[in-house]
Amino acid sequence: MPKPAIPTAGALGSIEWLLKLARRVNELLQGKLNPGGLFTLTASVGSSTLTDSRISVESTVALTPTTANAAAEIGNGTLYLSETGRVNGSIVITHANNAQTDRTFRVSILG
Image (cartoon, rainbow, N blue to C red; front, side):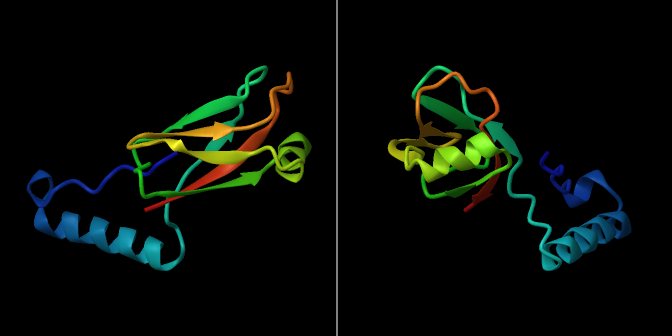
């Protein structure tokens, strides 16, 4: 779940705004980048669309399997991110067409 954006300075008092900004910068320095969430491949089709406002045509999207069937999908060599299905706000993930409903991945979106 993405963290909310820091409001503009006018929405808060100056000291409160600076404190929120400092906390967020400290989180970034500790590796808390807020890059993604969970995504499950759609069953019984050959592709799934990951929709997220943080995705751009230049984004790197990494998928880390969280279930055995998700890991097997990577091991089978059938999972890839479609370059033609990449637009601002979403990306098409091509995968095997099967009835498994637990091919779940942790998603990281950078850039």
